[in-house]
Image (cartoon, rainbow, N blue to C red; front, side, top):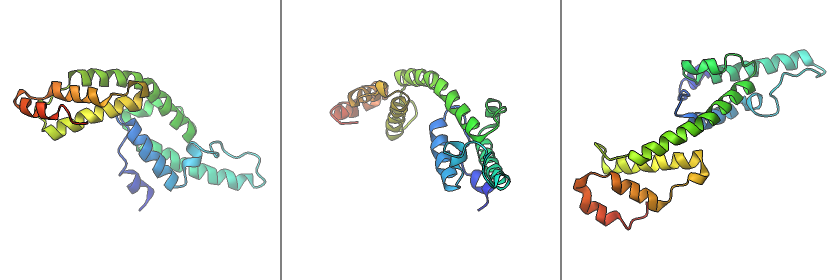
Length: 176
């Protein structure tokens, strides 16, 4: 499978999937032997090698492939954040910085969402998974904001439809 076709299978980075995108891209770049030009020991072009021309040419090919992967796996509105970047490492670092700043805003949004979540038209299973997913993301963004099982249970119970009152009574002792 060629580079273009395999890159098309990676979910594009947007404002809400950075951790997933980052994990997938790290694995992909490692598998393509491109990770070193993004984050490892080979982030700058060689300058003083005995065969500098050949080493520079090989580095430029690797860096070009990595730049293509990075640019092809982001939504178009993200390109402005990396337009000035000259190396794959600069692109990667731009996203790290951008999403580190975004984490505070995302954390606040998730806290607001968990505070007002309700089952609405979700099945019980979908609702449980939604609450657990939000709680997990909050913990990933801020380990100090870890949501205990008891709090998850209260969140789930508070947002369930009234017709599940019997079920609510039964699950109050369950671990979440």
